[in-house]
Image 1 (cartoon, rainbow, N blue to C red):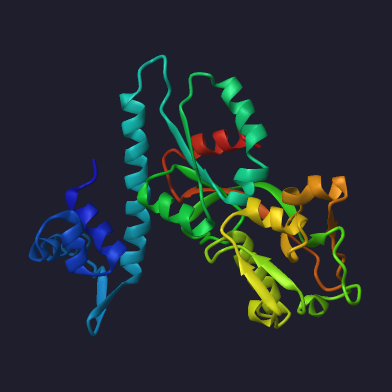
Image 2: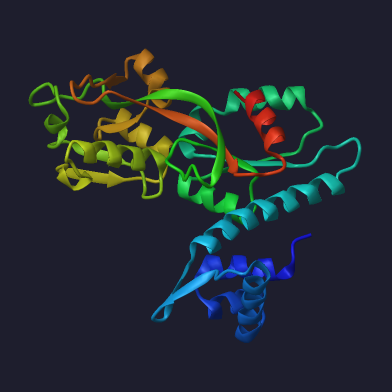
Length: 291
């Protein structure tokens, strides 16, 4: 069982404010300060440094945050294991990004359910930032993401590598057939919301070409891959996404892949969980089953 002062430390890390941490924990601010001083004395290090009225983690504080997050999540899973009856395994709680949730995970998850009929499963669908937060808070045990993540904070297993492609409706008419990225800047771009792995990957790859999202003539931001696909099929704009999300449309002839000379890329879908978890081998085995 984690020391209660570790939960105070985690709350301060979440809010980066002693007063807000105290309010969230329903204790006084002096109590929060006392808990942090206890941990600093215990480990012989400073956990937070101050700059004016703002605080930030020291290098030692960052290490303790990573370790404490992993321990907290392991404790949550241990509670599940201890509570479950012999005929019923612990609840499996994991998350997927929306692209993966809507176009990839259903078939492998169905196979897992058939092989483990006793399993209770909770699947959270969200963008990469949301899932990383759920991992940190212990709401999920692992996540399947396509976005970027801190490889120092998470252990991982590559699920697959997918082409990331520009597409439009098969009926879309260009003034001139595009051959390079710059030829698309006059188009209406359909784009996911900030925090989405799909958007993050696009922004980073456009940046390499010195192109920003704002360079496109028009842009529509949508928080649903399903809606983006519907808009795409109705010829409401162009977009960039994983081939797996539009494979059926390409095969049906309703969606066309744009072949550009200066844009060919692939990106990994990866299972991730908190680094150093004592359940890492178990998560790795479950992830392999879902591949």
